[in-house]
Image 1 (cartoon, rainbow, N blue to C red):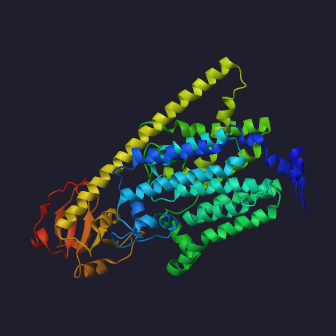
Image 2 (tube, helix red, strand yellow):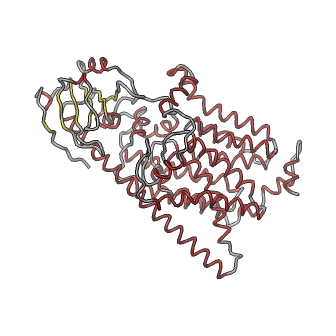
Image 3 (cartoon, rainbow, N blue to C red):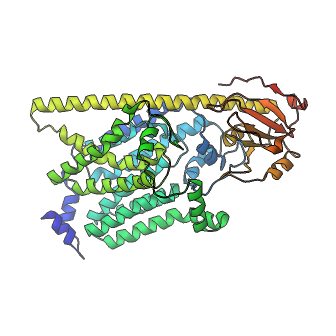
Length: 525
């Protein structure tokens, strides 16, 4: 009866809808403020204590930070990227080269982002459900790992979660004056971070507005379209300025990503959950299947939340929309991209955590028989503890691997400096972007999707400034470095036999032209 009145109302303020929007049950469990503040604070603190110490910039992070950082010239910015996350990092990255300061700033900002995205839902769902959903999402190793990183996916998750909550509030309560504005800002923010994700966010919301025939649904559709337009503006303008237009940029982006099309990448994402930040190609072994148990059970838990909401007639619209948006955000990465990275699904996890939390709260409800409730609560607690243990184990392994890379990269930069490769300088070859940024050099590649210079141009630069071409045992030195000095470098992860072909450098050992000798490894903290 209530729902039919809400759906069928046009041209007037539906009193039943207003009454439902103020349903005291939505805020059951007390004020959500302390719950959500605790979740957000724990999220930030966990990243700063467990992940951030000693964690240097990754490959993609280096590209984003170099656009505004003072340490080195900007790295090549390829067609698929958007500059939104660079804008977020800019206030600190533009002032200091300290990675530790950047990590602290982003971790605190991420905690605030999680709090705000969950706070939007306070008038829609009970406080324990919102807090539990936030805790489940924040406890994933991939969420904790990227909390302080200059990467867009976690920010897309916050934007999508907030936009969806604002949409539901605007759809059922015309008195919620800020809901439409929040929805537009959420979609626009998502588009600024990753334009394609904004489309997959807005599409199910537009469909939901039409199917629900929500109050002011034409306004909601227009507002969602406006949010998309605002979010895409920066990317489109840059497409005209640097790539020959949006069509050409989209084509180039697809080419760089291996050609978007029909792929079944479910197994790739499952394998990547074992601790691979990028699985491309994802033909690796899968030694610990237990780390993906939660991923396999996630659809069942979401279905349980949807069924519970439908059975109790409470919050079924919220659960349905959150699940639809989460599924939509996951689809392109599961079925159109031929490789996997766990961070791609962060926005989907953020939305799907809501029906999972709803189901967990329902099965542990206090109205069940005491003996049965104790058994259920005990089983759920045991599952949660096991889940957290698995997440921590994977997180610790990933962070430790990145820390080792950070130490190696620092030694490599010091070794290049010892050979006279100092600013203004240019670094090319294998993993040149990360090495170049730490050495204070520009990174230039004569081929690949980052191709920004010709071999002839690189040779010409070597007559004016120091140039180093990095090669490992896995690759062969290009013909144009024949006659350049060869210097052994510390190995970098799986890049063994790492060495630099150097020309144009002066000072120190570089004066000994023609000599090939190992470089003393400089230990840095």
